[in-house]
Image 1 (cartoon, rainbow, N blue to C red):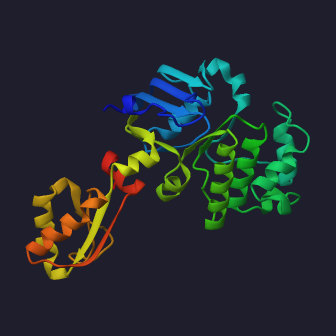
Image 2 (image 1 turned 135 degrees about the horizontal axis):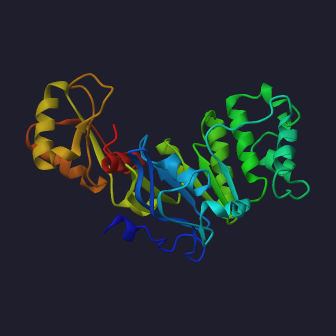
Image 3 (image 1 turned 180 degrees about the vertical axis):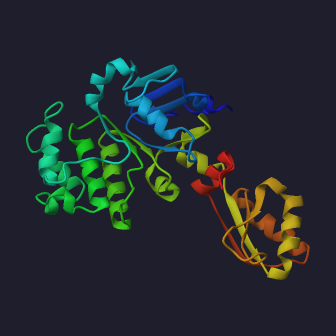
Amino acid sequence: MSAAAEAGPGGTGQGGEIALATHGLMKSYGTTPALQGLDLTVPRGVVYGFLGPNGAGKTTTIRCLMGLIRPDGGEMEILGRPFTWRDRHRLEQVGSLIESPSFYPYLSGRDNLHVIGSTGASPRPGRVEEVLDLVGLRDRASDKVRTYSTGMRQRLAIAAALLSEPRLLVLDEPANGLDPAGIVAMRETLRCLAGQGTTVFVSSHILPEVQQLADVVGIVNRGRLVRQGALEEMLAQTGHVRVRVEPADSVAARALLDRVIGADAVWEETGQAEGDGWITVRVEPSRAGEVNRALAQAGIFATGLESGSDLETLFLSLTGAT
């Protein structure tokens, strides 16, 4: 099945409606292509994880969607209607966090939000206090932003993106600078927003976090979509088995699994001493017994065996990233 065919909402979202889409999106910087016919389909009311290696075109895509740069070709849709850079007034229904947030350092967090709110459609009374509470900054709202940590500035930026009560929220690496507690709080906030009908589009390189957060995932590589679909279904179709053997058996075990499973689906994990690491086999978790049996029949006995499905394994298999 092609990526485009797999990309349909498949019942995900509200009535199968589309919050954001690109069709054949193209963008080059000089002679260097950044987007090469990118097709995305983001259903309404979901958390969509937008993934890809460095240089895959994620930030370029977001900048096109937010009207910050013009694509060279293709089409975009936002909230069910065609969108071009001339339609930027429609972005009042979209909240965004792109790259590093900027604030007035000598103003408080609360005053910064009031200033931001005055530059567009005015937020309703009390909204500033609501978003400060949502991102956990109510107790520091009166402090000057110059006293904020990187993580606090990031949370303030998310609060700013939420001021207009957007129907679509676009976030580029929102977990930057957040500590583990901040990441958990952000995840809960975004899941709550999606549950209330807001579509959340998140570009991130923190794959375990995306796995816990996203309903739908799109993976891009070299400016093209390589996989898109409901995360639960994608993980059900892929998986891995990790096996550990005695160091003296490592080379023989790797050679045997290369023959039985295929060399392109077997690798020794990095960060371990040579011949002393876990071997990962990209197969369905249900085949763990088959892997163990093949080794045992060759007189190689596993000292450890694990199986499961994770987004990192899927990501690496589709992008070749290391």
